[in-house]
Length: 371
Ligand SMILES: Cc1cc2nc3c(=O)[nH]c(=O)nc-3n(C[C@H](O)[C@H](O)[C@H](O)COP(=O)(O)OP(=O)(O)OC[C@H]3O[C@@H](n4cnc5c(N)ncnc54)[C@H](O)[C@@H]3O)c2cc1C
Image: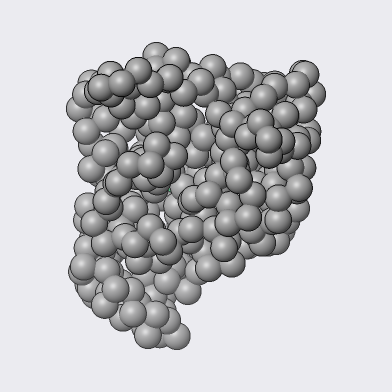
């Protein structure tokens, strides 16, 4: 089996699949060949693209009902992985959603959809984040149990587990093309470092997932890549324990970061799959909007970056076998919640690849199947 892509999706799946397959082999009454899994990553390092550019939040109030169910399940897994390894992967950082008068309806909808949220008045929001201007916030909602994820430790842990379970992890090798042989039931894959054969290809190529499908002559899923910009501004008096503050109207978010403030204009600019770069205009918009909502007066940006968030048309991840092409499995479209949903998604995909049941409370996995 060849997994294409060494972001959080591919790495989490490699670890979960190899471990599940190992357990099934041990438990089998009859001899059972163990899966040979190779993961191919085009870049010289893992997690170079979206995974290395996230803001590392875990919030049960973000995304669709499916993404919320996946986040709740992933949180339990992340807690357990942290406890097992002795390296905690989560650290509490509340989320405060803020709404101006125009977005009160959206805030109410969020409160109705999210049991983890409590509505509060602007003064209570200001207690959590003293820089919030009360006159810029009509109402707010607090998710006290939201978390920061240690993304670096997470993908390192998946890499270690995958390697220990026998996966071959390769960097600096890109899939170029491939053809399926029906009679032999296998792919011949051409990479920029030679050929290999695989009975199954798992497409975990993030922003390039449709391009990878096209290289294997599989119909695309209609994925859209949206660029998101992040900057870290110098700021005085920022408390390390301040929450992640998100505008319900989708105009900005910010949180403390290394003595400064991490800000984003929450942009969604369509982009081809590429090594995304922050545009000066988007950075300026972020600073302007955060200055309007706070008393901070940010004026100097220390560093900035951008990354792509890849969405299917319904904005849910795509997990499952391609409906037309045998031997091709989708694990893509993780959108803006890939860090916080990958742990549960990887267990679900591993179970599907091993034809085993796996239940995630509140999730109908059919909603994620490729169409
Ligand atoms: C600014 C920003 C903030 C975010 N914040 C959060 C957050 O707070 N919480 C959260 O849960 N999520 C967040 N996300 C989303 C999250 O980062 C993504 O959903 C997740 O990283 C997607 O992981 P992936 O493995 O699918 O993609 P990627 O990490 O992009 O990995 C795909 C890999 O496939 C490789 N590849 C592509 N084509 C080929 C090929 N032909 N051959 C070999 N390899 C190939 C690429 O090089 C790449 O490394 C954020 C994203 C951005 C951009």
